[in-house]
Image (tube, rainbow, N blue to C red; front, side, top):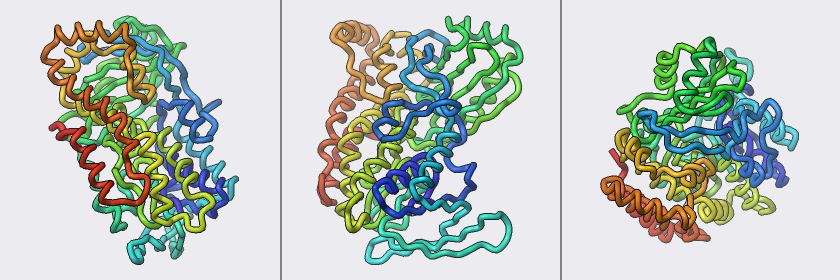
Length: 451
């Protein structure tokens, strides 16, 4: 049983069915409302690694667009060709549900988990109320499964019932959440849009991304179509109450730019930014997607990694007599941490640095020239950037000329480099004591959470 029919849940259900397992996929919403309903930047290579066709046709938005990165005061940082492509998440979600159904998955919408039964530490059944036709008398079902997959998002509707997982999966703090929004508008004044682009040295069809506009960890990407007919505004900031919110950031931008016309469509959400939980499997239970915090913290993207996690889970449990056996699902956890754990810890260290720098620190970072094309492209491509030798000497000189930034950045960058290798040291087999030691080492690398 997979709970949550967003992209991570529908993807996991598809992968498990491909392995010959009998799968049921539940969602509390209707078939057109599951998962994110906005556009997101994704990487084709993540889809290929997950064994799923990358977005195409109407599902696919702009690809390889020239992106101009500017600081909070408008100072130009770098201009790069982004490795990401736009994806309509609603259409992607519908495709994954269709593929899952074609693979034999039973999909049940409007399903509410009423209670969870745990026997000898293992989740064994759930009490589900189903109301497929809206108001009326709901149907009640008791569903048993060998393996439950929690893909219900950061709330984790199943994980908090597991005695093994509950101590490892604390609720994500507000300082580790991103309030994000992506909204698209008509352009009512093309000349005004041209003037906005010209201020940043950009042309129609390109994106202007301002960083540090609402706290050190924040962004506002404005993508204006080549025909000057539409504009997309993608924003995000830390959701700790000290800054703005995604919807408010969009509202403020539209108010300041009168060339932006009527709203077409969009959505908003709150995304976990912390590194993945050290443990996200237990007897009879595995987490995927936001429920496991499988997100690239540096910019809050988890679509591709969540799809890959679904394939890793299916690879671990396929062909076994008991797919929920603790030793079986631990293999999935270990494989994920070995491949992505170190990268995501390093990304979390970088994300915390941005929060610590604040708006003034980010502006100083841009003015210093320390935000290079290599670093920016690496972040967008969800990998740890490794500058070429020709760039290292120039960076060293810039750090010498910016001692206050150097004092903050160098220790974090050093810890990030060490963190890259930490995932490979995650225990291969069930060993809670070894996992506790591993987790303490990761926490030392992260350091305290910035205020």
